[in-house]
Image (cartoon, rainbow over all chains, first blue to last red; front, side, top):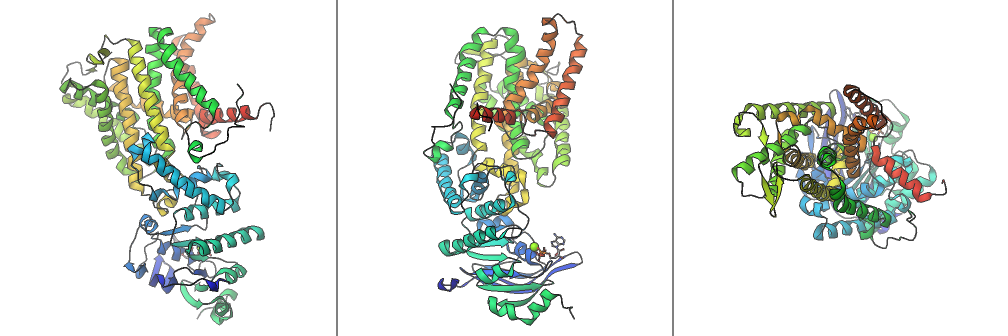
Length: 263
Length: 358
Ligand SMILES: Nc1ncnc2c1ncn2[C@@H]1O[C@H](COP(=O)(O)OP(=O)(O)OP(=O)(O)O)[C@@H](O)[C@H]1O
Ligand SMILES: [Mg+2]
């Protein structure tokens, strides 16, 4: 497994996060940390609050209570585009690609925040704007090679099969060269072969670029295989946090998955 | 020459990123430009220039403007006529106050004025979408025209309430006013369209175009990858209104010669919207094709019956025109939202594979 990589200091820390939607308490006092360069798995039964947790981390939901410390800076509120600019990228449970755009354009859009030439240069498409565009095109082509999606470069993503769309979405997130990558069920709905490919990409990203990854996944075999550490949520509360092996044998976790009633 | 991509290997990303990566396309565009500049002004008569070609060029520019906003950035607008009016009235005010500024420069300055007004009326787009935004832009349409009618300052208190193009020259040649020839006005309109179409194409294939399309396709995801919705939408309103403003200035100064606010009423807004829908949402070429279609069909319907000796009352022609437009809009909205531009692309793909069907 990944023990060879050296896992660093705390990159992200969430403390006492609570979030509710009207009457529904999605998260209650959740605290955990993500260390630099680790692959953290977030698991839990349906409706446990996993997606909500990612949404809180990248500023899409604002928690009712709690603190988020990212790279040493504590904040309570943040807009998603600010999170993006600070190096947090993510993919969605229900694919959120730009359907009318090609694979290439989708991934290029992931680098939009790194491009700075103003619209006048862009309109002229001369000098700096052109150089900038080509530079980013080169970087995007490296991602396309890495994800082995050369053949669908110019295809509008709306026409791609589900598994490839997931891969393009990962490409778009990677294009931003994130420090923290949040993946919401990257392997949902895939067949075994596609899952193996996706696992390989995730581990390679982690290995080659040192990207910290927090991923939500239902497939236990995958989680046990690729995660360094696992956080378990149930009914919006954290019920376990530790190595895959420790979590697997934890009685609370087994109960949660078997649906043992709560007191 | 066969239309083939084979053998044209794109050896660099720069070549792959070009506007017309296929050589036959470049030849085709070059040919059109040669004809438009070198042949048309010498063979077209006054009627063709004044009634067909000049309005076509101007509407094509306005359609590109609206397509940037609606087709690329996904913000529906029914205020095109009003933004064109802003350009026209701004040109009138600036050129009557400062006759020494070159009129073509004034067109561009008026574009910036229209851009500013467009931004103001684009602010609601941050909160509202689709149908509701269309209603907000409709309010702009009525408010702006009402203002231009009501406040005499905008038409220099001219008793007739119209704005009239004063005689202005460019490089010693008369370009506006009654003495400007149709050929000159045609060439100026053509040049504006060529330059601004190219600039628009550059914008949409770069960072800004991608940001617009991202907002259009899924604004939530766009924000999560770092695109700021407010700036992106307002930039779309600004640039779109700039194009419409310049087109509006050209409407009065290169085409009609004088006009009242009626020249920019709600029907103009719809007409430009139809051009964009028929030509293809999200396509610069489509905007031009749509403008050509909508300006040519009425001309065809007025002239064709006479050619085959079929007497047709004018109002019948008008009705047929409306039926054709209505039918086509329904067809394109339901069957092919990418309009003529997409049909053109399909035809090219077929041609590329010809003579093999697959
Ligand atoms: N935008 C929202 N509005 C209202 N309720 C919401 C919203 N988002 C999430 N919830 C509720 O919060 C709870 C947690 O949802 P969340 O999507 O985070 O669960 P999850 O762990 O990701 O589940 P799954 O495994 O099904 O994806 C659920 O009860 C859900 O109905
Ligand atoms: Mg979820």
